[in-house]
Each structure stands twice: as structure tokens, then as C-alpha cells.
Image 1 (cartoon, rainbow, N blue to C red):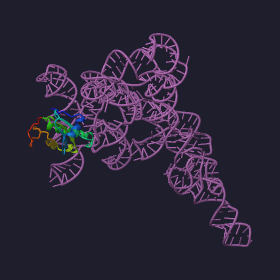
Image 2 (image 1 turned 120 degrees about the vertical axis):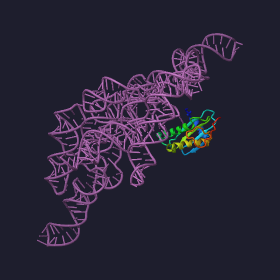
Image 3 (image 1 turned 135 degrees about the vertical axis):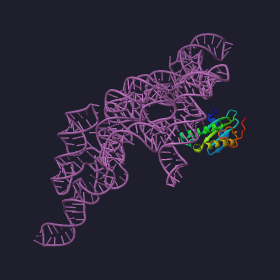
Image 4 (image 1 turned 90 degrees about the vertical axis):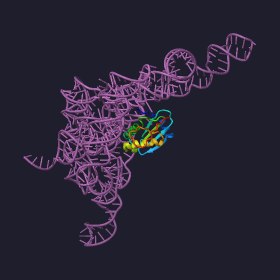
Length: 129
RNA sequence: CCAGACGGCCGGGCGACCGCUGCCAGUCCCGCAAGGGGCGGUGGAGGAAAGUCCGGGCUCCACGGGAAGACGGUGCCGGUUAACGACCGGCGGGGGCGACCCCAGGGACAGUGCCACAGAGAAGAGACCGCCCGAGCCGCCGAAAGGCGCCAAGGGCAAGGGUGAAACGGUGGGGUAAGAGCCCACCGCGCCCCUGGCGACAGGGGCGGCACGGCAAACCCCACCGGGAGCAAGGCCGAAUAGGGAUGGCCGGAGAGGAUUCGCGAGGAUCCGUCGCCAGGGGCUUCCCGCCCCGCCAUCCGGGUUGGCCGCGAGAAGUCCCUGGCAACAGGGACUCCAGAGGAAUGGUCGCCUGGUCCGCAAGGGCCGACAGAACCCGGCUUACAGGCCGUCUGGUAUU
């Protein structure tokens, strides 16, 4: 299914100021809990990363990783912003997914069971709030 | 084969799985409905999509008459074009052995201004070294007249040296004390005429002794062109509220004073108003004329903001061919439909091939894949770009 997207600058600013942060080589996450709605995703890639082509590719990899990791059973009540870095473009895709999973766990977003890579202790607790 | 010139083209390929988005038809599911979802088919970044430098289409606003001015742009000639500052063909100048390339290429007797440094002098210029004449002083020779030499007041000259981006025509000859267009020939330059060309211009002839340095990308002059803002243009729909808007109608303001009239009266109403006051602000580029708005009444429509829809892709379109033209291009025929997002799709991952590079004796392995991402649409220009393909031509070399 298609995940809803964040579209307003207001929402991004709120996630940046009040959300929980976690950094990984491939990405930075800002997760804001308790929104009362379905999971919403946002992507940020600044001009510092590169020109339009580079930024597009970075954003697409992040979006694809999020689709594979969170797509099947998105936890409700979160606004999640993924920020692209220089590494995002060249990092092996499996490691990029690992970065995302780890960052989700660190910020307290419940890890989702059915991920593509089934190894490691992804606890089966399903988010419900 | 080597080196080079010009023009055109491509700009990784194939496959598998999983996705996003536009459209199409059927079917199934959800929903009262509007509609949503699944399955299927099909389309989905560029030659520059970029910079936003020109020109148009489209949209809204302004658009009354006359004149002037300002500002911006263009600048050899002819053609092409919807238009252009683009393109094509020429002309002139410059470069290259050549194919070919480059040029911001109107006017410097309309005017103002500038020409640093160096240099004597930088525009009706100038004399440092120098060349020539040379009063005279001194020295030497001589019996003398006088001769020679050093210095030199003063005068003539601008050839040579030297400075400079540029020195007031060049080369050669005559001429002269030395010189000088002073005179002559050729070249250059200017004017006039003839011939050819639509024209820029070219060729030829005559005259002129040279008068006219460069910079117009310093100002400027001349000719021609130009309304403003832009798809966040602009329009529509729905929800929710008066401070907005449209149309029509009416109207200088106010004071002292005066007249008539009503009222017992304070005072009121109407009219006059020759006296003095105010007569403003804004808009139409400016100015003059002219016009409009800012007040009151009536009727009608509903703003900001937010969400959705249209605008939005069949076009100055593309491919192939024919005709005309040196060409830009024009005309005709057949066929094709070719991206439409909206925090913004056009992808993610993997495998094989391929190109480059590095390591290795090799087998093989590692790394990398140019510049760059549509946003209303076209025509150009400019800039960025790994690698590669095709064609025409030039200069060599080899062979026959």
C-alpha cells in the first residue's frame, strides 16, 4: 500500500524540533510520536548533498528503503522524516535498509515484523496506540 | 596510413523481480451515491530538460488627442522567418601552404572629451642626440693673404638615432649648405567620372601634393525597433463571514452678512450670496488640454485563506518522400500521436554483456559509467559534456 506523505513545511519543522533523532551512516531520522493519525513520511535532501540529479537519486533510495521496511504494516501515530546524506547515494542497499531499521529501533518506533531481510532480533511487537 | 578542416548523429545495451504515475477497455470487490481499489494493456526526461540572454504564442492589466522627452535595444548588403539580436548567401578586413576559420563591420569636417608610462613633442605638435651655415675666442702652420683644428653666440633643417600602442603618408630618384611633396614615378589617401552589380562593393580613368592620427566598447549624432506584468498569468467550484466590488441615480463645502417667512421667544425653514476663506489627495510615463476616482442613496454579486478542478499539450509538431531554391527555407503528399508531476512520478535491487582505468606473467579480480532532471508551450542563443559513429574535403606519405 502507499504510505501517506508529509507535505507542509510546518510538519517538517515540528518533527525537527520535537521529534527524536537518530543518525546512521546512510541517513538521519527525525521521528515525532503521538500524532494521532496514520504514519506519515517525509524526505529531506539539502543542496549540500549535490545537484538536482543527485538529490533525486538520494530521495528515491530513501523512499524505496522505507517502502520495503515499513510498507507492509506501518505503525500508526508517527511522523517520520528521513534526511539524506552523502553516503546515502553509495551505501550498499542492504546496509541502507539496516541503517533505517536500526534508527527506527533507536527512536522507539516499533520495528516491523515482515521485513525483507528476516535475520536478527526484530521483535514481533506490533505498534498499537 | 598520418596530420587536419567542416557538417551530421549517438550519448551505454539486454533480462528478471519489486514499485510510482498518466491514459484505455473489460471484469471483480468496497460504497446509498459521488467515487475508490485489484487484475490486464499501453505511454513515461534532455541534447542541452540547464543559464534565463533575445524573439513569439497564450493570459490579465493599461490603451482619449497632440507634441516632446527619457529609457532600453539593434547597426555592411541581400534574402529566410510568425518574429528576432537567430539563420542562409554575399561584400569588406584579418589569419592559415590549404580545406577553412575569425570580426561590436553606421558616423571622428555636428559637437564635447580622452590618448597613461616613456618621450623634445600626443593633434594644426615638437628638437634630446643629430645634420648644415656660422659672428667670434683660442691654438697650430704661414712673411702675408690665408688655411686647418677645438670651442661657440645666433640661425636653418627634420633625413638618421632614440621614446612609444600610435610621431602629422611609404619606397626609390632628383634636388639642396643640410633638408623638406620642394619636384618626379609607383603605392596609399581624398574627390569626380565611367563600367559591372538589386546592393554592400569591385574594376578602370582623371584630378588633388596630402589636407582628414587613434578611441564612438567615453559621451554623443543618425536610422530603425520597443506599452506593462507574467501560468504563483488567468478562470471555475464548494464550505464559512462584511471591512470588498459592479451597475444606476444625486451632489462643490462651509462662514460672516442680507431678504422673505414661521414662532410670544430661544430659534427654525427657503432664497440670495457682488464680501473674504477653503477648493485637497490620487490615477492616466512627462507636459498641455481632457478624463476618471475619493461623498450619499438604491439594486446586485460575494473577499482573504484553504481544498479541488480547468488552463495542460494535435502543435509555427514529428517521420519518410516529391517539387522549387546555391542555401536558410517554402510548397505539396502519405503516415504517426509522442511525458504531464504537484514536498513534485518517470524508479529500486540484482545478473549478463559492453566501454574506460588499475592490479596481475597469466587465468582473473577491484573500481568507475560524461554533463546533467521536464514544470504553460514553441523558435533561437549561450554555457557544460566521458566516450563513440558516419560523411565530405585539405595537406603530406606510400603504392600503382
